[in-house]
Length: 246
Ligand code: MN
Image (cartoon, rainbow, N blue to C red; front, side):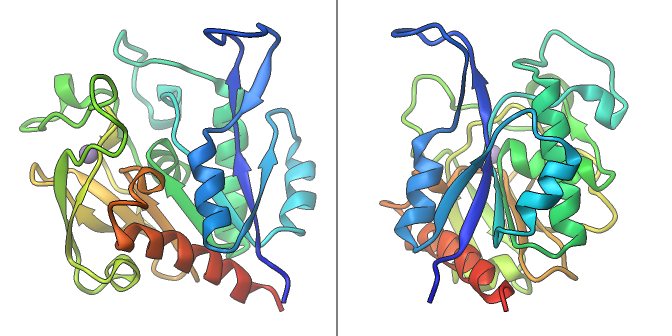
């Protein structure tokens, strides 16, 4: 049996702290290692592919992973630019919005992480809190990006008992890491919220009519040694990708 192939989007790294300053497109290794750990083959989708190129690539892959990263441009959810919005890359916004809409329409298994979870919501017509600390009433601190290891378990999430996520994780409550300052404000009409943090923020979404489309606000790729449930999340995603090919 052939292993499922998972296409991952990438980010730009033009200014590395050490080594060559030549422009690069990169992806944090933990995403790629998580896919390989559960039997998938990750490949990368470089920035700059056209919509026609994406259609071609997606005809040859079994799943799509949207990783974390900087903020989306707020134009996509009709909010003004502000000083709190950081690390914009509109070329990345474009390719990820395009690949997300294709994966949804073509029913290609999709796992969307952190920025990816937010982008999935925006791609389908939802909006974001551009900055939780300054905008969301009652929002707790979700931004443990600095001063904590990435696996730091920052808060719990309550998972909707009747959801694909609860079935996949095998639990209705778990501790998660939290490395984000934005979050879902208005949920897209075709998405269902499947997990919430104690302050009420939507921490996971899914598309009920899709074979496997899950977004999580946390970073499961950093929790594989702490949580069998997060291994299950990658495992079931790659399994769904394998099932899709016939
Ligand atoms: Mn959080």
